[in-house]
Image 1 (cartoon, rainbow, N blue to C red):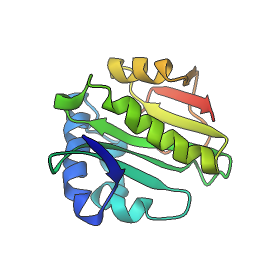
Image 2: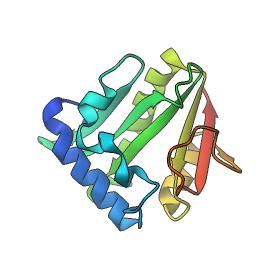
Image 3: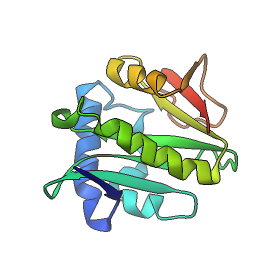
Image 4: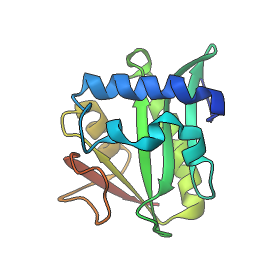
Length: 156
């Protein structure tokens, strides 16, 4: 498996993975990434200064990804977004490498990294805590995903 930057022709494959994961965890509803306009063209959304998205590819197949963007137009805080993996590669350790790639980029541009998720994504919540993210009591001001119920921040 390799981690590489998102290409324009990856859009439909990564959108499918994200949507499949959201369905798996009951996230196919309002107030979550399910309704993000950017989901149809992640390449264009992340193709800007201080934003990036990485893909996990295995033998030519897209298996997951994650992105970094400024949070609520902040110059200090970024957001880890749309980190989803196909079931077949969960538990292999590749998610840690993907997160490390994203956070190395984030450190170049920001001081903190924020993320929002769902409490019922148990493995993801354990993963974020294991990698130094601190659970918050409420979302940061400027959050767009009102249906998320778990919020984390990490000093970079």
